[in-house]
Length: 241
Ligand code: SF4
Image (tube, rainbow, N blue to C red; front, side):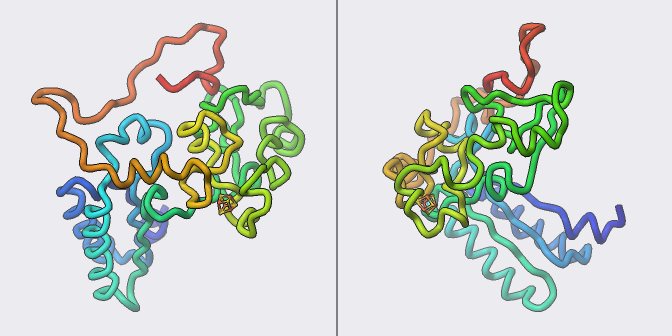
C-alpha cells in the first residue's frame, strides 16, 4: 500500500491518562503531519476485551482526559486547513453510546481463524450466542438468516428506554458487549448512555480517583498469553481468560 494511503487510514490508540501518552498525542500528531497525513485519529481506549481486563490501569480521570483534549485543541488550531485531527473520547465520559459496529449485523462481519463468523470481533464473549461457522453454512445464510446475526439486528429486540428513543436508529442501543460486560445482560441499554438505568455504573468509574500504581515489581498490565482449551471447544466461544 502506498505510504500516503497507509497514513490516511491509520488509527492511533493510546491511553491519555499516562503522562508519556499525553506527550505521545503531541508527537504522533507531529509525525503524522511530517509524513503528510490528511487525517489523524487519536482514539482513546474503549473498554472491551483485553482493555476491559486492564481498565483499572487504562481508564483516565476526567481531569487527565481534559488536559489531553487541550493538547488536541491546540494542535487542531495549528493544523487548521492542512490536517484533520479526530479526537475520540472513551464513551464512559460523554454519556453518548457508540453504535455497535455501525449496528449489529448491519455493515460488518468478522470471520475468525476457526471459521466462526461474528457480528463484531468481541461478540464471541456473549453468552448463548450460537456462533455460525463458514465450514457449516454459506456466508450469505449466516449474514441473512443465522440466529446470531439476527439476535440484535435492527430495533425489534429493544426494550425501554431504547425502544421509544428517537436515537434508536442512530446508535442501535450502543454496544451489546459492553452491556453484557457491565450488567450481565447483553440486551440491556448500553450503560454508557446517560438514559440507561445502569448509567450510574459508568459514572462511578468515570468519576473514580486515579488507581494506585501497582506494587513494585508487579506487572502494570494483564497481557494475553497462550490458553489451553479442550480439543472440541470452538475458539470463538471461549470465555475471556
Ligand atoms: S436510550 Fe438507547 S437508543 Fe436512546 S440514546 Fe440511549 S442507547 Fe441510544
